[in-house]
Length: 466
Image 1 (cartoon, rainbow, N blue to C red):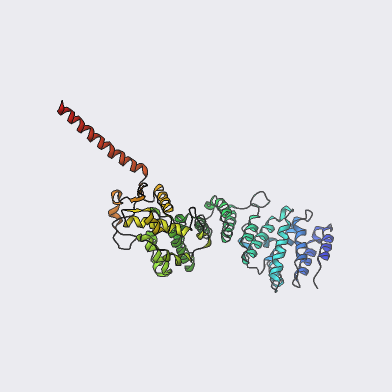
Image 2: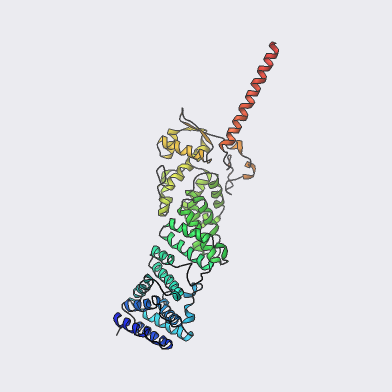
């Protein structure tokens, strides 16, 4: 028959009043044993037992550590959480010898292996950690319980709750010295959990903390988790060029399972297509196109869209639908000026594609291709020109967009050769954008040359007349 909460509290008060320290430890362990066998059906008695230790300032540390470590071992047993994964926390060392450790581990596995066992375990852990700790000697045990709480919440896909459980782990100002490597692992784990629930704003805060500590580890797994978190943060913050580069880099890491590497490669292709049109994206598309895995292991619509973007073919609305169905929620966000991220990327790409086909185009015709109003089409082109991503100029009185020839400024046209390894010769090669300052200098130079020639002609004519 299980012991009631009031009986547990009475026994704990009685044991706390025992004057001899050595007479406390074993009775506490006997009481814990009675709470775990038979398996508990409610969490209240175990919560009361745990709070008695973490909130008491009169229990001797030697007794408290031994009993509380046995308690933590039993709670972790059979949960899938490895206590050794928490650096600097070794509750097993105070739980006794190997036989005692095996005893409490076996008892915990049986106690929480029932139909309601996982629910009871979760309620016990939450009840203890929510109560807070006033005893300074139990920081290690509380850290393990918070990690366990995060693990249990993550199993239920409560990502935000799991992240918050880790956020409550004190990293400074406690009796426990937390090494930099453990801080780094906790920060990265918080980032990954927050990204799962799309809380990328908070994730950025903890990633910034991790960035200050990444130099402190040589652990390959931690470094890989950091790089992957960075790629996902770029993705969530719509920095798609950077995201694609990081995803592609991670997709080559042999430490990742082949299926996961293909997922990273798929994410690289997706974010490269969503990136703003311009020379940087052109280089990225060419680099991805040379990766044979894209054409052999990914869905055909991805490689088709990639090649259309790379070769600057106009993409029609019906061609976008299949690609759009594979996007994640944050990649469907509405951007300034109307439309989704994908619609903006396709619009800007189509403007560049028009530059390949036409010398000039009216804004009405451009609007028809972009499926926009003429004023919105003009705004799109103007923004691309201002950002140095499109070589063109606008004749507003005539409502025309004039595209400038790329060959005039192609300094590396000969070495570019082909587009992304496609063996398709292109007349116009990808080039670096020419700034407005350079264009202004060219025009000033031309004007000055003309003024000089006119002045020379006038001077010659005057000399003849004289």
